Length: 200
Image (cartoon, rainbow, N blue to C red):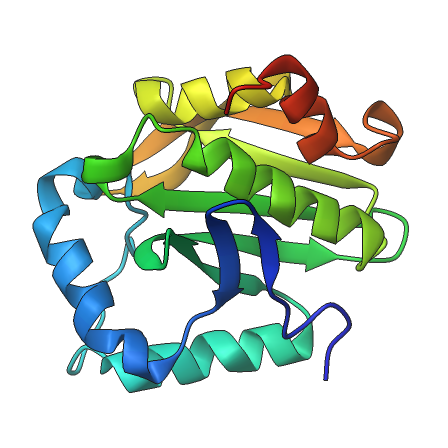
């Protein structure tokens, strides 16, 4: 089993855990209910994907295989016991880089409650303490206000724009990169966030 997986991370009512096959009904309903909220930011393939879409069980198997191999950590987000979104650490690289990229989505009905900053901080701290990574980054479209507020609340450093960075819909879209290294948060990112947002 890859280092740092499987893992369950918790802070108050926010809980990160591996996605399970039995989450299928709730996950698919959540994505359908939030289609217009999420699709403008969802990465797509620039080349046609042939064949049927994978089932949810196949999707979970793929994510689990990536986690076991150590290249990705896909977490479901539970809030007060309800599945509300997902946070994934991808592009995990060791060697002289020791870095990973954090992506996330959350249901619109719980957005703005401080769930996502906590989830991202939990994932980042896990990367630093359990995986031994040195740096994590988040890449966000400049138009995505809610996601920009997450990294602003967490105090991630703005590293500028990556032009035509990710394919979304029918075009290559610019993204702003935000990052943090372990030296910047010696007590952990969650602890720093809590110090600045004590009521959350």
